Length: 67
Image 1: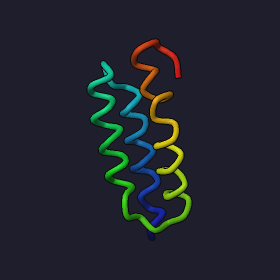
Image 2 (image 1 turned 180 degrees about the vertical axis):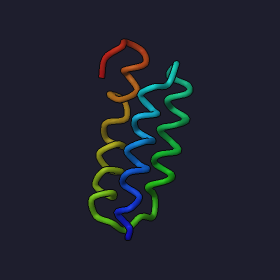
Image 3 (image 1 turned 180 degrees about the horizontal axis):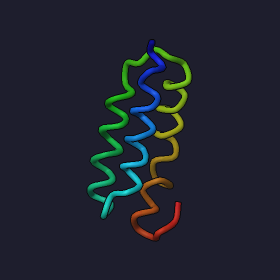
Image 4 (image 1 turned 90 degrees about the vertical axis):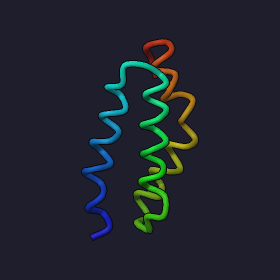
């Protein structure tokens, strides 16, 4: 049941990469982290930790067009 959040998480990440600018992407990124906070499913906890550690690289996409 808890992994049912995975498809919605995928959509949120896709939407993040469709952002028009870094400010919008940062807001969406923080919403994803908030959404994943408190979820007990290990794969999604791992995803949250990975996103946190990769945050500068992910958001770099909106400064330089790469990630």
